[in-house]
Image (cartoon, rainbow, N blue to C red; front, top):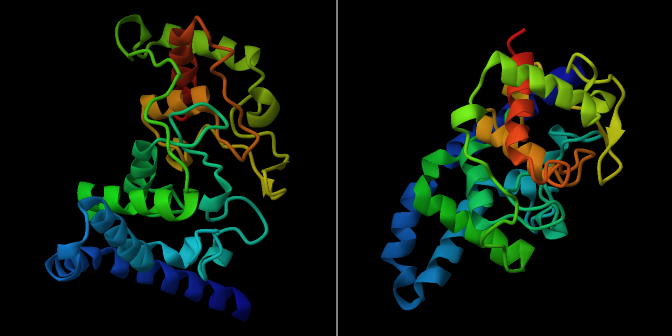
Length: 264
């Protein structure tokens, strides 16, 4: 019991420290731009400012070298998935690019801005400039490769016949079975109850689709569509873009069925 209380106290301290540090980069930006930045190219200024933000707000979980081994990371998932991402491995769950590809810069910015429910807080208070700066730093310091600027995944607008309806959700229920989703997520969407393994051979539980508030890649229709089409690299969740090729609009039916599970 004492060890459990100590662990909880340390977790709370790590969270509080992150929250406090999230408020600091604004003043740090002013200092940096006002003093040391005058002799540096604009892009280099942004990267250096991104390093400052990373050191204040990200290093506690993702570590000095971006390997996901920061001091607070042990409290996230010491023996199971998820863990803080190792940026140097080049494997990213949350992308709008095809499975196996690096994310776009916009994908990194979206994840930093929105956070990951129950795992990583939102850093939207950095503002668009700060978000771009820290994402640019991740690319230059840890990923060290050019990021894609567009995706070949076909996106169909969520309009017209693809809007939510009972009929669409029913079609999605049939697709849910056709695509083999119950194998991992169960017939009722609550998960099969059996852990799988991620890329690090850590146990990972299939998502409980009846709890959309836990979806790491976002709750809105468009976020679920993106997850289906791109998959979540590093986990057993594959991309279904090939399965929906030529009938991409049908993916919205599956989105609607998944959302209907959360209403039960």
